[in-house]
Structures are given as structure tokens and as C-alpha cells.
Length: 208
Image 1 (cartoon, rainbow, N blue to C red):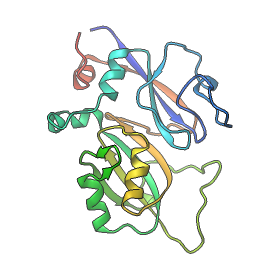
Image 2 (image 1 turned 180 degrees about the horizontal axis):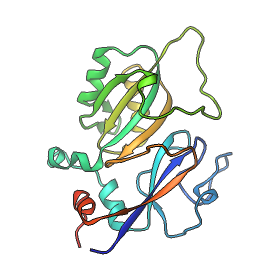
Image 3 (image 1 turned 135 degrees about the vertical axis):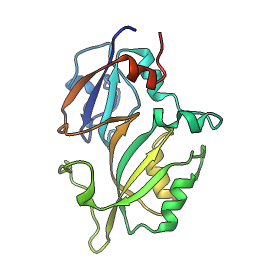
Image 4 (image 1 turned 90 degrees about the vertical axis):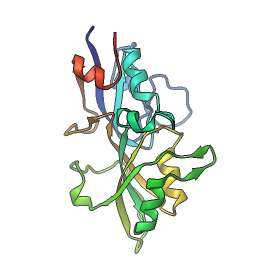
């Protein structure tokens, strides 16, 4: 099997998940960090979201990571495309809200697939939380909470819409893992290249 690789990048807040600047805003692009024109993003992040962004020039790797499981093959393929987010929300989270997120919620473009949702204390997050620039706008006397939310598809702004649907406005969104690849200790704006061995390729469903 030919060698496949990908790049794990800790995308800062305010960076678009694209190389071309085709907008009229103040957001920067990936061209500030990468010069390899063959790289493609495997699973975009909004400019206002942070954390793990995967880039690869291997179309097979890109497809394996971004193609969501259908409802029919969800059970056996969900781990391949699972994406875990650390979500700071406004308000205190109830058990009923966690159950709603886990069961799937009805959005305008359809019901979301079942997810994994749990409440986590800020001190128990799997990262050393960095200061966002700019900082989030917290309302005085309004508590905030952190969730770990794993989803298995990629609807537009899905996590933000899911939490809003259950009454938990999203204040900060950090992607922690994608398809088993984790952000780890990467600092903001840092990246590392990962080479995939035959076993990892098979786990992703990539075969020659």
C-alpha cells in the first residue's frame, strides 16, 4: 500500500478553512500557514471555531474522513467519521438537554444522527485551554458550562445549531478529535504531519 499522510492543524479563531481569500471580512486563510497547493481540507471548521483541522493531498484519505455514514450503515461505520467537540455554552446543562442532544435533534435540514453528549468540568477538558483572541463575551451573572459532543456527520454549523435547539447558545467551539486523530498538545497555529500505516488505512476503510 502506498504511503498516505495527513496534517493535524490547531486552527486558530478567525482563520478560514480555505486557501483563497474570497470574502470581505477580516479573517485570514490557510495560506498564512501552508504553502503546499495540493493540500485539501478534510472537514471544514467555521472561521469562528477553533481546534483540529485535518488537511491532506490524498483524495482517499479525504473521502474516508469526510463521507458520513448512512443511517443504514451507521452502527458499523460511525467510529470512522466521529468528530468530538468541546463546547462552551451559556447556561446550566440539564440531563434532559443531554438526552436530546444524544438522541438527535430536528434541524431545518433534517434530524441529526445519534450523538454522544456529556457534561464536563473545565478543569477536566482534555486540553490545556488557551485564551481565545478575542475572548468570548460572557454575560455577567449568567453561568456557562462545557460539553463534550461527538457527532458522526457534518451538517452546516451543526454543533452550534444543535446546542441552540435545546436552549444552550454556543459561546466557544473547539474541535478535539476527528476519526480517531486528536488535537493532543498542539499549540494554537501549530501542525504536525502524520504518516498512515497499513493498519490505520484499513481502519479508515482505505484499500489499494
